[in-house]
Image (tube, rainbow over all chains, first blue to last red):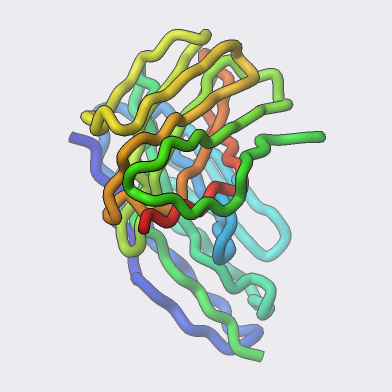
Length: 110
Length: 114
């Protein structure tokens, strides 16, 4: 059974204090790993898709990386508007179902 | 309009009511999904329609009934719900086939069962 574990559950950072969120996964062949951002009361907003180990993608202050067992979402010099819950999800090869983690709730303090 | 739109955004219903959630996607995708999101739990996949055919039904109680009349529209019909069904219901869409099946979500419908 596919599994996704995100850590930490919650993270509090000072503005400008860089850090990383972790997503560990178990899947029988990876078709794609996804990162989403979710603001309170809203649907998840797509950030990145990673397909193979070694791949990296960047968007503004966010950088996602992928290994065979985990993915990291690096946040460089975060701002208060980066506060949100970040969700990780995996999709196995040959199958449509996507399994989500429980998310990391990030709070950036001014 | 763009993306995935859901109506209503908020719904309060009694346990004996019948109501429906509506979803429309404007992305040209050929798969649509219903997810349930409860506090402290990961997103739970309820139903998947791919090319207008239901391909996934994750042991969802029969009081939830999906309908997909075409590739752009999806409904979730609700009947005799329980208080524990109160949650955020998310509609999503994606393009089947090709690399990673990126799923795009709507804003969600907050359901409260009283």
